[in-house]
Length: 261
Image (cartoon, rainbow, N blue to C red; front, side):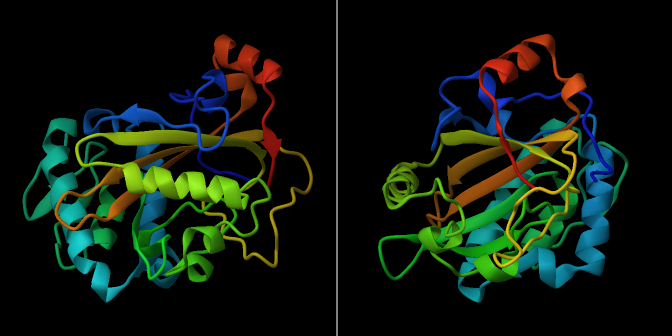
C-alpha cells in the first residue's frame, strides 16, 4: 500500500481525449516539465533512501551513454534556479534537502534533486531505441534489471496493448522528436502498490485485494541537442479517488481506467 500520496492531481490523462489512447501525446516545453507538488518533499526523501540503500536496483548507466547523461545533468542544472533551488557545490532543494553537485555521477545526482525518474533512450543496432541509462526509483511493476540495454519492443513485451503496430508508432514518435519542444503523455490505473514497485516479468502485474488508489504517470520526451539521446521522464502521482477534483471524478466515471498492481 502506498505510503506517499498526493492530495491534488495536476494531470489526469483520462480527462483529455488526446491523452486517453496510446501513444496519446501532447506538446510540452521545458518550462512545464519538472513537477513540484504537495508530495515533493516526501518523494525526494524516499528517493534519497532508495539511491543509498538500493543503488543497483534504481540506477544503471552504460559507459557509452555517459555523455548523454552529463548533457541531461547540465540542462536540468540550468533549469533549477528558476524553480527555487539554491545552487552551489551543495544544492539546496525547495523542500530544504541538500544535495552535493556531482557531474561525474549525473543520474544519481539528478535523482536526488527532482521527483522525476529519468531514462535515456539511445539508438540501438536496429531501428529501435534502447534503454542506455536510468535513475528509476518509482517503477510501476517493472525492473530496471530486466529492461536495461533492451530495445523498445522487448521492454514492453508484457504489455498486451503494446502491439507491433503501437511499437512502430512509438518508434516513429521517438525518431520525430526534435530539440526544443517535447512531448507529454500519461498513464493511469487503480492500484494498491507502493511508489517503489519493482516487479519482474515473471511476477506479472495482476492486482490482488482492494485497490484504494489511482496511480498516474506524467511521461515526457525530449531530445538532447548535442548527443541526440531521447530523455524519457516519469513523474508519478498516487492519489485517493475521493481527492480528485469533481471534474476529474466525473471524467473517470465516463472513461474508466484499468486495474493493475
